[in-house]
Length: 346
Image 1 (cartoon, one colour):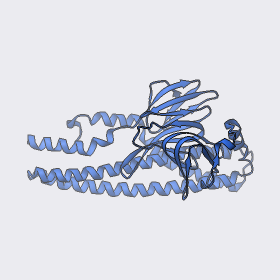
Image 2 (cartoon, helix red, strand yellow):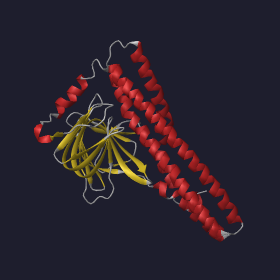
Image 3 (cartoon, one colour):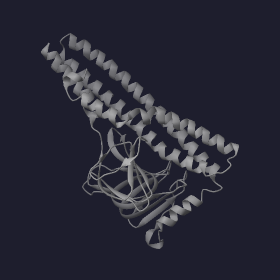
Image 4 (tube, one colour):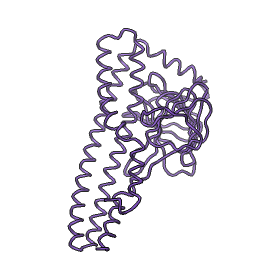
């Protein structure tokens, strides 16, 4: 009986230990009015020393900044910006993710770091290597990237552009990165660029909302795909657990352990799918905020604009209800606490 309890405890650890790690970044410096919210809960003051986990959204006010540290990498969030911490899995490898919804950020990547964090704006994803660069995300969803040192791969939906030190690119919302410029030939006035991105919305509201709706449909499709992967993985896990339990009852501990490892593998796959669903759900927050700003900026919206926004709202609220509000930090931490002891695993 004791042998069986030890086996089940080991099995429980195989199935539950890995998912308990909560990725976080540390707040290193704060200046001015900087607040944070976890998954759109109440806004609170951000303080030095705090740990930010996936789902934490940071806002900086006028003249305010904050610096975050992630594994030696410095992330500078400049004034009037909205930013969130995220993570995803690619080929079973966790990648830190940072999403700039609006405003401007700088990043200095540690040269000793082995993994490559992903930076995402409303328009593009960026993979960085040994890099110091600056990126802006405009009110109209456009992205401006300026690279000081290293290499940045800027990816759209179907194309990618490789930037070397001293190069930059600007990508309009919903378009692909195709052109780059030499930084020394262009003076970047970030305040002016952001102001122009706001002014450029006028007269293009329906076009922009249409592109946002297209992105929401794409996110919804990707979430459904991960849901399918997750469901299949959970079914496999349950099947292997059932076989494991039967073998354990028969005293075949060695064979039971093999099936336990298989169950653990499928359990991790299901969790990876769930993390990627959350990654997509978090990306929708900035898109919806952008759509709201565009829509409310029209004094007397006509029916096509109203209908498009309402469709965006319907999709977003479903994502919000199922994947954003349903996974708050307190629930995850409570789950982690309960699983610290073997006796609490079952």
